[in-house]
Amino acid sequence: MSALTGYSRLVVAATILMTLSACSTTDIAEVEEPAVAPMTGQTNDPAPGFANVKAGSEEDFILNVGRRTYFTQDSATLDSVAKATLDKQAIWLNSNPQWLIKLQGFADDSGSTSAMATLSQRRADAVMAYLVSQGVDASRVWAKGYGNDREVRDCTSRSCKVQNRRVVSNLRTERDAV
Amino acid sequence: MGWTRRDFVLGGAASLGTLAINTPTFAAAPSYFSGTSVDNGVTFRSTNFARIDRKWQRQVVKYFSSEPIGTVVVDTTHHFLYLIMENKTAIRYGVGVGRDGFKWYGRATIDQKALWPRWTPPPEMRQRHPELPEFVDGGSPKNPLGPRAMYLHRDGVDTGYRFHGTLEPGSIGKDASSGCIRMFNEDAIDLYQRCPIGTAVQVLPHIADQAESAAKISQANAVE
Image 1 (cartoon, each protein chain N blue to C red):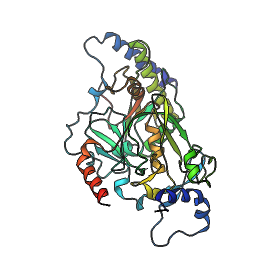
Image 2 (image 1 turned 90 degrees about the horizontal axis):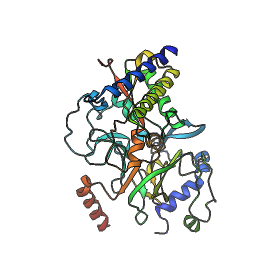
Image 3 (image 1 turned 30 degrees about the horizontal axis):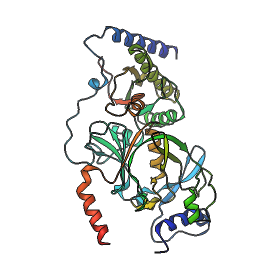
Image 4 (image 1 turned 90 degrees about the vertical axis):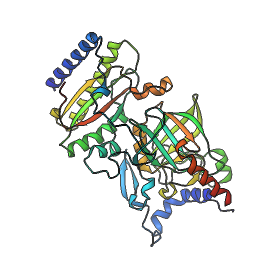
């Protein structure tokens, strides 16, 4: 556990450092996601990969477990709903050991840019600690905060903010190069 | 005409507990239920999804619209609830909606959520059905809200409408409630996890992409 905390601290420090030094290169979560081909077809068609969902696939995780854990304003504490989501994730991850998990934390709360970076990292770390406490091997998981990198925009401020106060559990087959 | 579908639903709700225990189900059709599940200490009957049309089962579909991620959109004509996700996709759930005359449209937010909520029949419903109790405890096999309710508010005021579970999986895909949006119990639990307090909701007659199909449906209904 102390190793984990040490690692987390390192990441927080690194994130703050990056935020402070990032004048031209913003750390954006979307950029790190695999590029997605523009969607064609009709509403209500099965989404790519979802026509026949296989147990243990990423599609299975998205449809039957859910990737997102939400937080209340200015908090990195897991409430009962968050824990219920993470309990399901842990059960799934424990029975599908081939997957690695990248946890992306986000914040859209009150405070400075660096406060948002810290909060988003604390959220990602809280999710990581909980998954590990539920038996997920710590070596499969890493956590990174993206601060106020708002994925959800163009809605009323409140509905957007609640979506942006989250940690997304992304399945990976290998660790990020960065 | 005296025996409406709603009467049937309510009557069913009131007597379900005894029915389920004492009388064998109809022999021919497989049951809408299969085994039991436990949720937050409450044992409930699991939906037998083998019996349910694939159309009404939870699935990820393409969804072309400008609604922001995390928004819930309900297409009442086609009995679908969409939770918008990234990259022009959405999780689609089959739902049962209010009968004609009870339909409600507009924007709202999920401002309150409850686990195994107590059900208080609205006064006008108790006037029509004096046999209904003042309230039904949460977790009761007679409680039509099922394991979850998400309460729709507008400008901070309760609209009286909810997303909730059901006692009757066969009513999903149909118009058969008093304006509420009912879901399979498993789906109500799933949606509850995915919608933080403050989630934006839009209830529509139909989504724009389905206008043509909606016109056909309303024509068919007019002939009836």
